[in-house]
Each structure stands twice: as structure tokens, then as C-alpha cells.
Image (tube, rainbow over all chains, first blue to last red; front, side):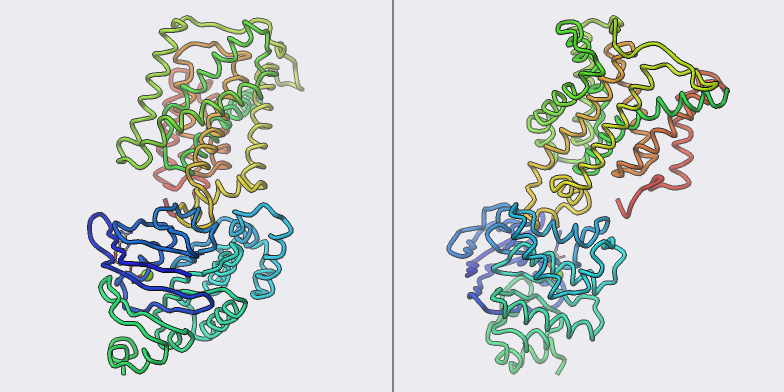
Length: 234
Length: 286
Ligand SMILES: Nc1ncnc2c1ncn2[C@@H]1O[C@H](COP(=O)(O)OP(=O)(O)O)[C@@H](O)[C@H]1O
Ligand SMILES: [Mg+2]
């Protein structure tokens, strides 16, 4: 479904990604793990078109997308929920969700998606008219996720959705991600909560200093010495 | 007397408000301070003047048409000039609208001479008494017209899909593009709407104001202060800031002296910025 081949990217000439290659198959949950500042978010921005690769190719559902602008990539069904939520604070919950469905003009379709999101996150329905800046971090995260679902994703790229959440909420969040995946949506999950992410995922990649240094199934990575030492503190 | 002055101030402030809203919208969406805003008010006044001279279109009745013309002109200006400097260095973004302003003013002097003109036989003219307050009809019409246009813009930004997208961009550009919003396209629309505000105000003013190449300069400056006063990027704030300025200008002009009225406006601005740098309605960081 997604095939990234030998991508390089830099911020103002400083390399952030070096020859990054990975792939995601339809229906999978694939996780990217790695410590802070290693380039995980940069990979998310790269596939969603917020930044451009200096070299390399990205194929999504049989189409080359590395040159497409971000707003075109969303239309293809590759939806990026950025790190730190980035909800539109001044707008209310419903307006945020409607913006998620910006690319469709079919009102019946929008209502269908809205119902789906409200079913998954009832709190968003209750808080429909609340300004999103006034909600708690966990609720904002639900909103960011719901807004992403409103874009009708084939592939949902989640960048550290558990950031700043209390452990109870994290369990809820991971359950929600699993549910989303069971609805037929492929998930690319970037996480600092390595153990939970590896338990949830089908496969995972380990990123260090802008390179992919390891890949395997969730259980393979949990068992590997490198991951144990570096990320699980064992 | 005070009531008379306040009325005059509010009436003036409403027109300032419409000019300021456009400026605020453009700043909020693309981070450009449009120093050419006043010059565009001036251009709209001339368009209004020529339409009146050649096809006898009344400036007040012609307001929607002139707003539409200025909307189109704004879009073209965005595509030809503004778009190119948006990604450029900060100084280029600041200076380009300065350059445009000087260009438009000089162009007006060259093409239409520095002579003062005014529109004869506008429909809205005359005066009447409202209780003890003496009101000039053209000023009342211009301010009510400004409020109507301002309300339309307010409604558009809050209740339409395109308006919501424009708000989203002004809150968080990259998150907006992740929603599938085409920033370039919406920038052009927002710039067009901002200029249409200047255009509508210019047309309404043309019914009673003298028209000359430098006429917009003060409107542009006042709008800048109003926007800073109201909080950069907040369109409601800009409107409120502008009405305040209208009041300060008329009261100050009367009690302290007309030669100080603009100094007073800028002084109150400096004071507010010291007390509350975000402006009256400023929201969040930057
Ligand atoms: N907008 C930016 N401008 C410049 N450098 C950046 C920017 N964003 C990230 N970087 C740098 O790129 C590297 C990777 O960052 P990032 O992808 O955010 O890491 P992670 O998500 O794994 O924590 C870091 O060294 C970071 O400092
Ligand atoms: Mg990150």
C-alpha cells in the first residue's frame, strides 16, 4: 500500500533522514519506534507531503506521491494526524471534524462519517459545540483522531497519539486504534510507548539517527536485544 | 455636545472598521501586513468616481460592484505579486506592499493628477436631526453600509466551508493543509476578500469624501493601528479597535485640537500595546 524507497530529507541542509526505506501492506498496523529527535515525525511529514524528499520515491496505492502537495495526498486517503494534536483551538469540536471532511462535498457522506466518529468517541458528540482549546489533552487527542477519520483514510499515520496522556487514557487510545484498524483502516503508528505499540502492531521498524536500523514483527522486536536494551529498559 | 461627537466618532469608526477587517484578515491568513491597503481604498474611490462620471452609477448603490471589482483585483495582485514573496525573506514580505502602495499612489497622481475631486449628485446627501444630534446622511449611510459588509464577512468566515478553511489556515497552516485545504487557492481568496473590504469602504466613502491620490494613506495607517489595537488576526477585534479610534479621533480633535487627533490615535495605540501587547482581542501566541 505504501512503499517508501531510499528517501533522504533535510531541514535547511541538515540531513534528517538517510536512505529510509520501508513499506506498509493493506490492513496492517505498522509501528515506528525510536528515541526523541531521531526522525520519526520527519518520516510522517515526508509521507503526508508536508516536507519533500531530496531524493527517493514514495508510492501509495500504486501512485507516486513524493512530488504531490500535502492537500492532494489527503485526497488519496493517506491521512496524517500530527504530533501534538494541532486541533484548531478557536473552532469548536464539530467545526474541527467538518474540516477533516474538507475534501468531500457530499453531505450524506459527511454525515455518515460524523456518525462513525461520534460512535467511536461519544465524548466528541457531547462536546460538539465546545471550543477545542478548552478540552483536556485526552479529549483533544480523540478530536485529532476523529478529525483524521473524517478524511476517510485508507492509511492513517498517527504521530505519538499517546503523548501527554494519562496511562488509563492510553489504554483507551490503543483500544481505539485497534478498533479503527478492524474497520479496515491501515495504520502507521509512531510511538514512544514502545512496549504497548509493539504489542499492538503487526510489524515494526526501529529508527536511529534518521536511519532504519531494524525491522520485524512486533514479537520479534520485543524479543530482540537492541530493543530490549534501548527502549524497554530491560 | 458629547453625544454629537460620540455619534460622529462611531460613524467614522465603522468605516475604519471595514478597512481594518480586511487588513486583519490578510494578516491572519498569510502573515502579510498590507501597507497598500490605504492605496487600495483610494483606487476604489477612483473606480467609484469614474463609474459615477461615465455610467452615472451612484457610489453607494455601486458598492457591491466595486467590492467585486476589487475582489478580482486583489486575487490578481495576489497571484502576480504577493504569492511570489510569501516564501521569501521577512523583509521582502514587508517591503513588497510598501512598494505597491507607493506605486499605486504615484500612478494615481500621474494618470489622474493630484487634483481633488468629488462626486456630484450622490443619492445619499443632506442632514437631519436625531433628537439633539445632528447627523449627515452620507456618513450614516457609509457607516451602516460598512457594518452590513462587515457582518457579511463575519458570517462568511464562520458559517461557510470556505470561511472555515480560511480560519483554519490562520490558526495552523500546516494542519490546514493536512485537511486537504489548498493554501495557495485560499490565500488568493482571502486576499481578494481583504481587498474587497477596502474597496467597499472606498466606494461608500466616495459618496461624500474628497478623492485624491493620497486620500487612502490615513485610512491605511488608522487601519494598522486598529488592527494592532484589536489584536492582529482578530477581525472582530479590528472592528472594535477601529470604532475606538473613530471616537478618539473625533473627541480628541474637538477637545485637544484637530492638529493633534492623529497623534492621539498613535499615542493610545502605544499605551495599549504597552499594557496589553496582544491587543484587545488578541488570541494565543503570535
Ligand atoms: N522544523 C524543523 N526545522 C529544523 N529541524 C528540525 C525540524 N523538525 C525536526 N528537526 C530536526 O530533525 C530531527 C528529527 O526530528 P523529528 O523527526 O521531529 O524527530 P522525532 O519525531 O523522532 O522525535 C531532529 O534532529 C530535529 O531537531
Ligand atoms: Mg516526533
